[in-house]
Image (cartoon, rainbow, N blue to C red; front, side, top):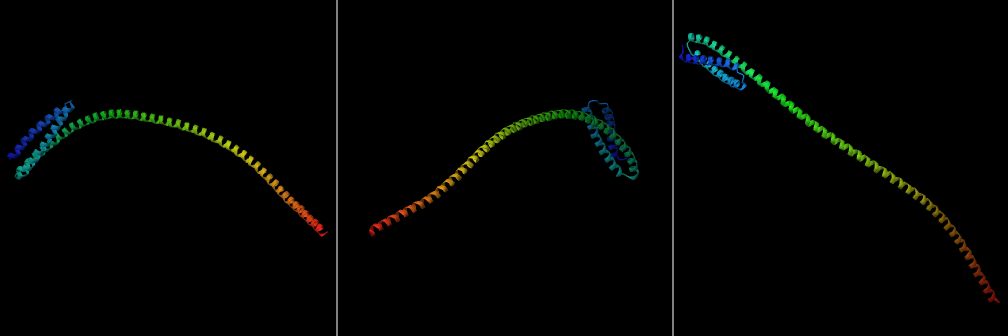
Length: 222
């Protein structure tokens, strides 16, 4: 048998015994931090076991066929033993992970509850502020409506007064138009009378001139 293989075999057997003892001890630990450290050491030991298994496999395959078959059969037993140890360490790590996950879930739940409560308070505060702002806007809108209504009433009153003023002005203008029409008629009548008087005056002057001419002719002729 190969001395090299025997050396690897001896190391593996010591490692396997040590790992089995640590697995049993770690399963009874209550302190999670200590258990976590033990699981890390066990996983490191499993890695060492894998290295030793590979070395034994390489060494066995390099020997004569007769010795090789015997060593490979023994190696299969060591591989089964290492697989068993891996399952035990995996169970320990899984239990630790479940416990840690449970604790983290509880902490997360409490944190989420606090955050949700804080969020609800913040949302309530924001909603209250928005409601107050909406109330102020409504008050300002109502105030603006009242002011607009008062302004509208004032404008309607001014328009009514202006309408009355325009109606009075229209009445006065109508009276002025009537007076102008009457004045036109009087001026027309006066113009006609003046024309007649001019004709009459002209006729009288013409008659007087003829009479004077006739008198002068009569005197001069005698």
